[in-house]
Image (tube, rainbow, N blue to C red; front, side, top):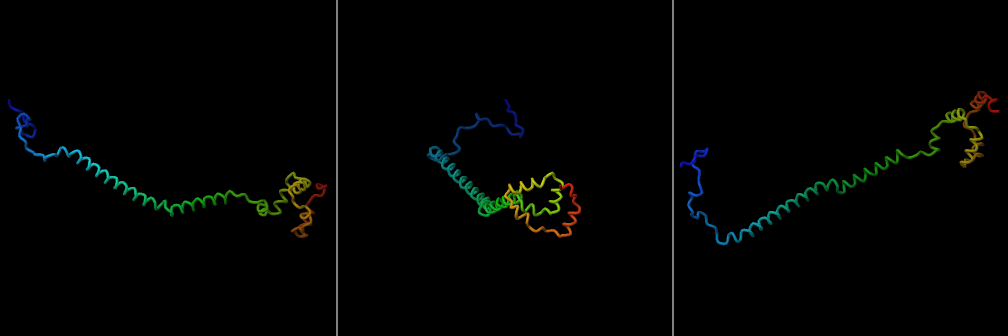
Length: 161
């Protein structure tokens, strides 16, 4: 029976047709020492890989460490302080005298004339707040005599009575 040819055109080899001769020789005790040799090489490879990994981690720490080192901490601290100062600055409550200092006397007079607040209510509010009324009543007014006369002339005296 003829054996079919494989696609390369060569005759296939059959194991039954091969001779039983020893072609290769192995040194004495080779297979006894083989497991120890393999384990030693694997251990050496693992140690080398561990060293490489440790070196990479150390290099990464050095690279990242610069940004999170003392310079990074200083920048982070300064940023936090700046944010806190900004929040305090924009959220602070101005004091009443500072707020009233920005309002002109004419605006205060206009407000009091247009509101339903009586003089008695103003006096009671000022005295309950601890405002020294005697000093306020006897302070010299910061208006000229002509302005005072004009205001008296414009005010309807019948409404005051």
